Length: 196
Image (cartoon, rainbow, N blue to C red; front, side, top):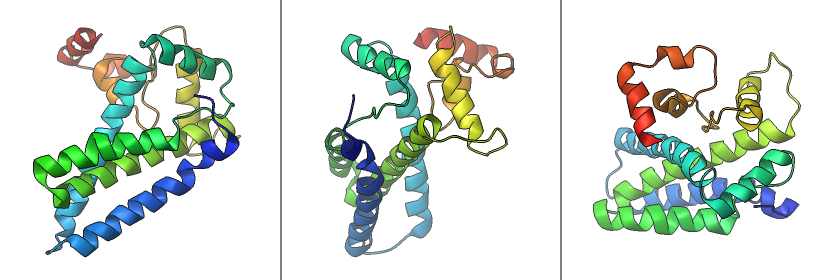
């Protein structure tokens, strides 16, 4: 979705504050502090985000007609301020993750998972911004993200749906990187075909 400049950059302020705020609530509410469990649940949330990012990009932005049209406009003008409005992503994390997880497993466990999800989303926002709006030298560590995402935009074969990681593209056989298709096992090749 086309955003104003303010709307586009809002996530760069809102999500660090939300993550810190939820961390503060977690620390204030926790009766006992288990840092290893907390970090594990945050990492689990982060990993879950990478899968959500891949699935949303592949199956929603490339297959749901109205969203596909907006996404194609982004492909046509990659330097435009295109993204998800902060209010929509906030609803996704609060109503779609934190509340149901709190009811299912309790707030103490739901909040670090949600922190991990939001941290993953924030990383996605940053990496996506860098790939479209920064000029990077080919020897820059971030250049490979830019190159990989450019292949997503301009390749004839759909692929490279992951922005923050290539992992799920390799698992599901949609990586456009040289040699990655050959490294997959026959099980994963079949599993990727099964998912479409």
